[in-house]
Image 1: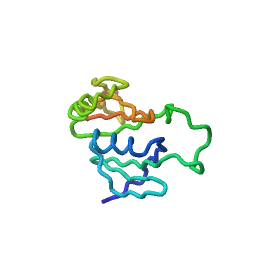
Image 2: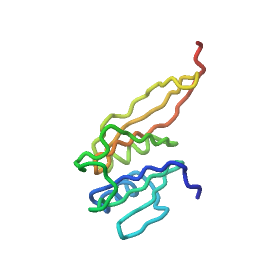
Image 3: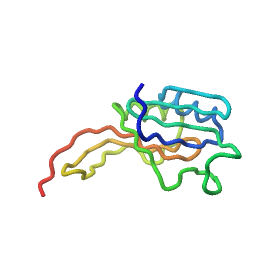
Image 4: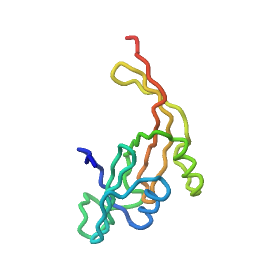
Length: 139
């Protein structure tokens, strides 16, 4: 496995609930796990994330209150966003923003992607997206 140069590490309140969500619902795989403190290095297609159960000595800069991760969403590019959305529906988990198409201008091109946002059990926003096309922008 190739370890990404940047991998977010998310503190979670209930490790088992988070593992269930990321692995059983979303389809991440556990690449590495340890028990004290509860920690897992997870992978999904080309994306990676770490989760660790919140401890008294966790690296935090302020009070942790739900929802965690306010002001950030993690974009996770995937090959089939509709399938992931179906998994979320099957698990009866509400989404933050429903599946929709968006267009973003980037590096002289318009990138079209199909995306939706869902909060994990601790409130971290995950934006799953599938690139559905791009075209050059005439400047």
